[in-house]
Length: 629
Image (cartoon, rainbow, N blue to C red; front, side, top):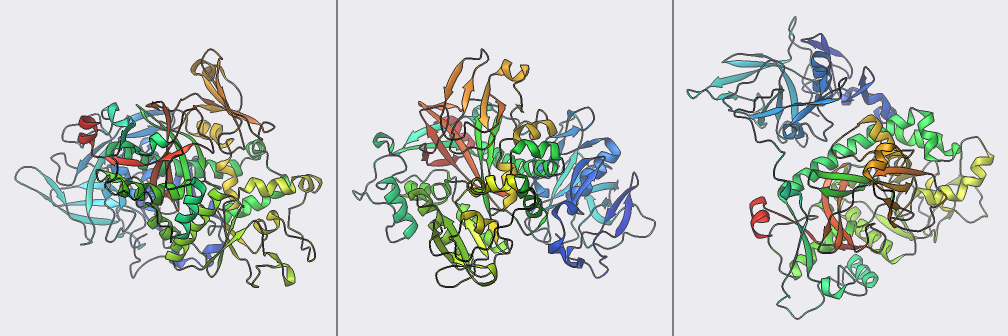
């Protein structure tokens, strides 16, 4: 969001009309009273029933302008500067892709009216970058239409917001000068087949999407301890692993995996885009009761889920995508944004392992994860004491301690609760800990389904809205804490929707043939039978109760567990790549919905499960990756 100008208008005020009679509005959130109480859905912009973006930001305007004038839109992006990496747009009605070319500032191909002008992150457009529509091009200036810059009315009787200086060099290069001295223009995007002088197409050598493995040399030091036992989280990790190790397999203690920098960029963009798609699908499901019914959630809790989604303060701290990396890029299996795992392995342990074994080449895939988690907590609305709720489990012990370190670095006090030990009802129905502190903010390792299982029977008997009953002399249940009205929980209740596998057929219906999605359906279709398919419970954890079938309906592998009574969905078969006898799954992590790092999980079996190893992952320069691995 850019800074307001002295003539800034209140949020939603009409500022002007761009060519094609497309209105632009003020995005001055600071002018909104009671913004926190406004529904999340009220800030989502639709045109012809098609999601355009958040009101009234720059990306929303650019997508809406392109759709109104040309009938196509660019894909969802996390930040405006990400648009510069796109190479196609989607014709909405024909459901086809059209080429989109990128030209850097100073290119020999000049911008044209109707093209996108893209700014890099930083300066005036810190973190986000910016996008505008070019409305007029001359040798001396360009005129642009935009939203979310200054929030002031456009010049009278003009179809543009601003005019930027331009210069054409003797060699024919076209340069645009940003009016903000601390901001940088990346270039412009033109929908055309002509690739002359354009930036290289991101569709590159499929070999760069291959997962490779290597072994480190034995460390020079004879010291076997490479984690710091003085740190509580590392000591808890060593206890859980029975030693200083990333794997339980002795001969694999030196093994690590490598991906190209190209694959890293692709995974980052896929993570950011898919987060947006899952959020869009979540909103869509909550607006369509017939779809929501397929998620098998207690009716009495649905109003609380909608309330959680509508509350704009209920944001994610972190989440995890599970990918199969194919020659055509990453394909997402599912989104774990309720209670995921592997954060400490990716954000801390793999980096310390690499240091111990002297691995200096490339980049630790999770080196920024901790820093980004700290940033997410700082951006959250948590205040005062945060209670960390975990089960009595060795893995959850070190995850809780790792997150506690992030909270501490963010300046937030926290307290770990094992089970519900020490929590009780206080006066007037509040919940307090053993020191009398009121429980207001919670981060949990428990899944929301655990709480729902506790109340399903009584929910079905009561068609009202479930509300934990104040039972002063009765022991607390997990559902009493997590569903209490005056307690905000991370990850929020609405994550039950995108974490449920029933979201996968919804996504495929909304975004058919999306390059990062796998075909999915509530029923077994002929198309799925032709490709092979996977049967998954809509609610399940750790790879339980999954069955894989090939195109001949031959069972390839199945897992067992406690979720066999759940409704099932069917997803296109896309086996994990097998690397040196290990089926290898790439996991990417988010902080506040944005890519924050990656890790690797491997197994001899085709389905990753709770006992699958986390292994160190490095990102390597493309040239080095192709020549030396």
